[in-house]
Length: 271
Ligand SMILES: [Cu+2]
Image 1 (tube, rainbow, N blue to C red):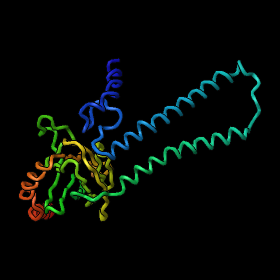
Image 2: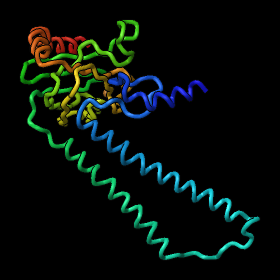
Image 3: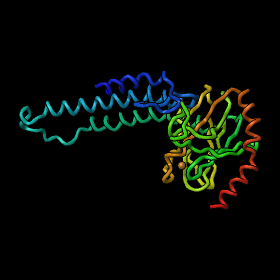
Image 4: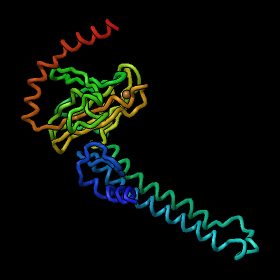
């Protein structure tokens, strides 16, 4: 009983709680941190859910009504009617109208996501079996991002989500993400930003987000990519512009592209 109450409560409370990552017993989406995700959540909560609930209740009512009203004892001689033009036109037209009502805002959101505004920074996410690599093409930065094993976690680092080198981006800036893969299909997904794109070897997919709040956001590879698919999380740290500039200074030294690429070759050679 307590558990049910808990689920019930979290359903309404999660939207106000810290939810840049999944929480226990969570129902519904993670809290939105970008306009795109807000659009998606509004579309789902304010349009889809009411329609879904109304249809479910209506169908349930029809079933219960038919079961009671036309049960054998109350209705011993069943009707032989097979067609009713008016009813058939209605049950074709009404669902069509409902679909149109859902499609229009849905396409609007899709097109908004698809049109990438002028990017302030560009990053490239590369999927590997089984970790992500990140590149800042304009800054000559390149690094790998591995999940931290459970035994090595520090306090406040979420299990299966925290990584050693996270992606760092400034707040309120348009970040264009180029997504590709080196071996098999992966997908770069970040629920709080409403972002999910396939990472396809030999091809670059693009998406974008504009994070509205400073914080750490977690996502996961969302295309089954092999035995360690569950262990290649995505961590994005959104910081202020000054913090980002500071990070860039450090990162340009620590993650200089040439050095890391050399490491990569060594790694491959030693395999
Ligand atoms: Cu993957």
